[in-house]
Image 1: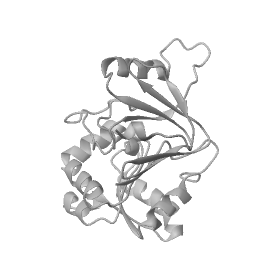
Image 2: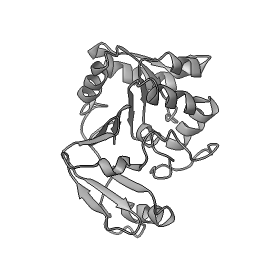
Image 3: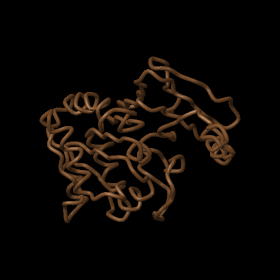
Image 4: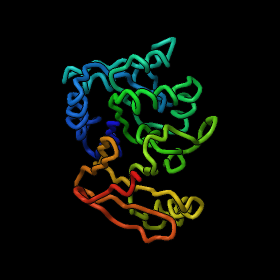
Length: 237
């Protein structure tokens, strides 16, 4: 497998995909990809056409053509013929519901695991590679068939992970929500992937890129911090 799993699409004060566009382009060019199949189904408040155009404007400058699966009458066939799969962020429940309804779970998994085509996701697109989408930050605005996702990696990701607890806010922190998850699922690791950070997966090798550390949670254990260059192989076991 070759996966690039990005926490967020946009850093504060920057334009869309600005900080990670070179990572995306370099990742695709490693496999001589000139055309991607985009999965836009995490979009809810704007159209799939707009989403495709937004990504095309950013990647087109590097000679990458952006096709979108929503334009194909036979979505599994489009996946079967794709050079690479790219899944954008938005609402993870909306994304999974549409991917399941079109029969794309097995189709994407086959292309990525058997045919070794590159997969890139950011935010919801990164959540989709986990065993389930249970560690997304999103509201369940629609109901998918199940929470089961692509299961390309054996651990859970929480994108946009942050430690902040705003003054005057009495609700649970992000860490407390993840602690609830690992209490109910003690066998699962959860990787709190902070913004401007990403995972690179090649085969069973996992690397962290970014200047911020990664916070890893596991039932019965204290949460630990890891930085780029640290051995994260245990997450892929």
